[in-house]
Amino acid sequence: MESIKDFKVCPVQYVTSINDTMNVISGKWKLPIIGSLYFGKKRFTEIQRNISKITPRMLSKELKELELNGMIVRKVYDSFPVTIEYELSESGILITDVLDKMIEWGIEHRKAVVSK
Image (cartoon, rainbow, N blue to C red):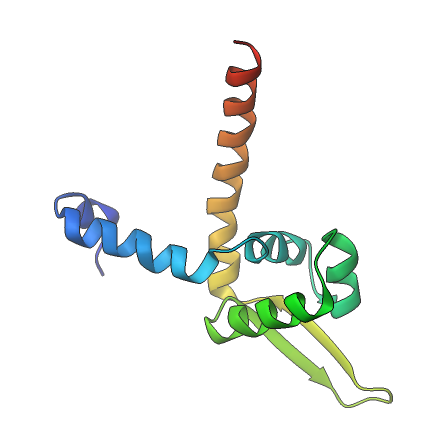
């Protein structure tokens, strides 16, 4: 298996890997959805309540894309009425390390900018 060290010696692979990542998580809503699911399984309306200003249509679209990219798992329960829950996949759980680093960076960056 290749490691990040292998990619750092080849700018093309490094940039390609960044593009691959951005293709999966880019957009206004994907990271907030992943962030919402970071805290456990949720139904559609629970996710929508956690993310202000997202429309049902946009949430549905983004959930489908995240599922297609293997970031989340959609589970349909045979109940009445039908219950659907979303949760992070293994790959989705792995990206939370990236989110934690982004949050750390954001906090430090804000402190540095505000202190100027």
